[in-house]
Length: 131
Image (cartoon, rainbow, N blue to C red; front, side):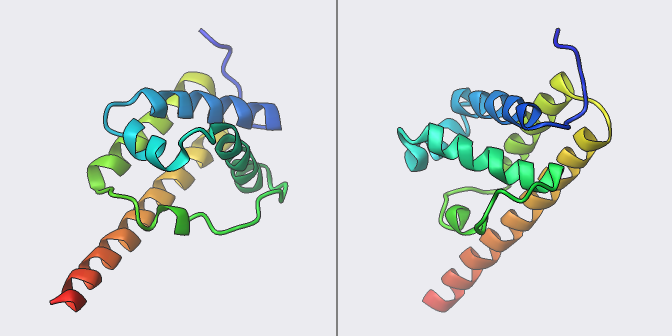
């Protein structure tokens, strides 16, 4: 069992991201959705996620961009976000403890809620406008 610690370094972020996305790549519900978009570009995606979480949790501004647009057209619904969140929480809880670990889970929850709301809104308005 790993020695749990808080998220304080880029190495901690890399452990979180690598462990989490290894689970995503094996998950029956999520692997095809992520795999169809990322394809063989996993190293690039992981690097982007390191920078994203480094910016969010360590306040070291290395991520530039908008995280929502790449997710806007994905064929996802609440069950996908729930699974994503469960895998993320399990990864954090298995490897980390402390204030930043708690913040990581809170921020992941808020992002999942916001992304789902935006996707549901877009789908609803596309269907309404298409009538």
